[in-house]
Length: 195
Image (cartoon, rainbow, N blue to C red; front, side):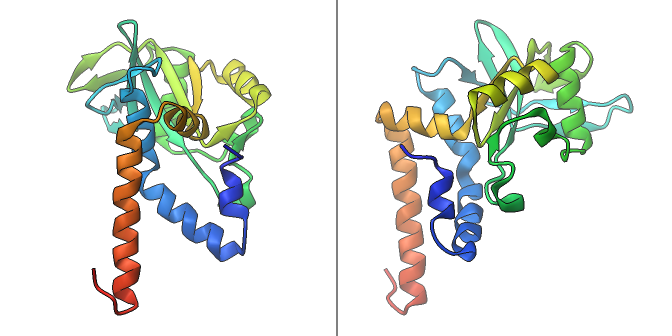
């Protein structure tokens, strides 16, 4: 599979903007399907993790992964076209600097010290670390960002898709076919040809 970003970059700016928004509707589900596959190194918890700050204010993250009986809170940042694709492929720690919301700060705190933040996923859990999910990444980007922030792992949507295609994952293919049919029906109806 070629660089996924090329699908968005191939053509006018408006095309990339449109496709990025469409992809953003369901890209988290791709990661969930990947984690549910028996060939994935992780399992995914049915509930998302909620982190609590010192004032007991809750912040819910995207995923809770499990491996070998250990839990890892996870946040996904898949910014495709934003700032002319500047954040699509992870290259260095500075790419995380524009994420300033409290949820991301708590996420980074767990990466540094897993016991520093209270976490629940239904019940209270004791995370063993944090996993960042990015759109795509260079190997040196994964290495430098992991070293800087202490992530237990860095996954990419691009690699999840690559795995799912290689595995011929039927849940993934079925999802794409349903969304493809819905979009086809919508555009057909907009042209005056209802399904």
